[in-house]
Figure 1 (tube, rainbow, N blue to C red):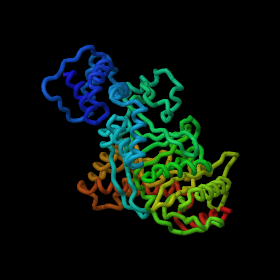
Figure 2: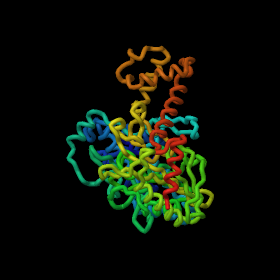
Figure 3: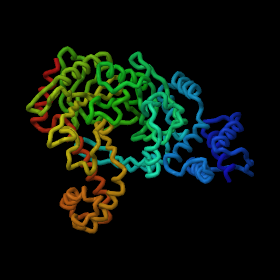
Figure 4: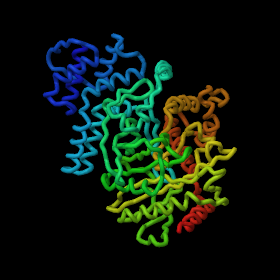
Length: 499
């Protein structure tokens, strides 16, 4: 039985091209060593398999039964990654493959191959990504993408306890560091034996390309500095972003802002996110054109979008770097009390930018989203942050991906929305809702008021649409200039200040 599963994994490696026929016996022996087995019985007849997930489950179950692997979700992930690491070619081979395709067939052929490879090695677990819940909601700002992310493994209590006892280590310094390539992982750090990265040079410095294992959208890639250095939005950032889309013109790339609240989840390591996907913000039109003095050659304007976005387009990328730097410098020091925008309070800076770069119709384009992280007693988590009444759906920072129109919502919502649907259909009074649903009570009452016709056939679609509308409001909350007359007037005052 276990010999069959080992041969299935070898065959999977051969079928995907991760290994070559000359490697077969060697790889089989490496898998035996990993499994702590010292013999192999050749299975009779053809060895077929249905999918990678079931092969790995068989092997891990056997390792657990024999005490080779602990029985918790994290230990199992560490062990099956170790098995896949046996099949994963060395970095030098992967890079040579990528470069050869880039040179002979072009950038898109190279990234197509690398994305497929990252899935074949199980670094991106296709079978987990499939479980994510996704839909599209029509809003006044275009079609917003809504996702409930279930592919990030939830730790079970045994794994959490084991992680607490695991020795703390400063290696790798974080999950984005180059030192993760091939790292075996531990209870408090994911295994990366099957992880490969592609070195790049942008703005004359050493960076790298990899994919996100949690793929929030098509070809969700991460571009990261070879040095463990903090996030910083500066002139060089615009140069790096435009260099990247110069190398990969079919991809967009953007950076989270560099301040808490408005930044992403990892501010300690300089990195960008990109991919082969067009977000709602990229499709949004310019609603007010603008000419910056001295930059008449740059097409500019305010984008029709709930977050405050300036779009710059020009064939000359150096001109975009120049103007973006001017806008960033102006915004960093900009205060407008009438719009409740303060550059700093008590020496703490508040203004920064979320920048996104792409190539469109042969010209370079930068979207600059103005961010401000000021807090008040009324909004302790941020004035330009999802307001408290929306926290039952979305409480976390609004990072780059959300800014562009894709909601990444917590996994708890999948069950909560199912349970809430039952309550709504049965018209259960909100005071009788279970504790887990109490946070949705006021929202539920509003939904019933808006949809008196709600029934068991329509409830799920209504709830999806209502979640999408909440996300649209989240974006409006995070916009520093609102889509009303005072907001637009304030935005124009800022543009006029850029000299």
